[in-house]
Amino acid sequence: MPPCQYCSVAPDDAWVSTEFVVAVPHPNPIVACHLIVAPRRHVAAFYDLDVQEQRMMWDALAQLSQRITTSIEVEGFYAGFVDAPLGDELDFHTYVHLVPRMPGQKVALLAEGEWVDLGSQP
Image (cartoon, rainbow, N blue to C red; front, side, top):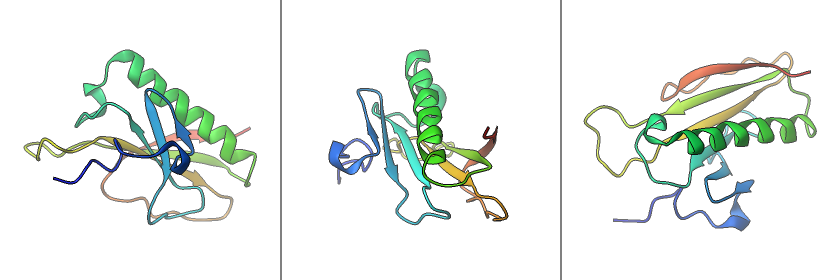
């Protein structure tokens, strides 16, 4: 079995690489700065993470949102949570899409995520 794509991310390939979280560019972005944020611990669902790990994921999403906002004009962000489908194989690694909303640009969000609007940027 090949290594998990999120467990094996090298720090040099990541926007963020900590003990708890890794963030990498999406391989087929739907907009500029579309990122994948994943926990370092290999779990199938976001709520399989403990509270500290969930907090680190939210902190990473907030920090990445701020970082992107300093680079491009953004109205807000969407977060798309992707967990293993019920009964799916055990090697699934949960992750979150971070998708910026640009002024005047419509985004077709991917069907695989459960999407949350993270609100407007100041």
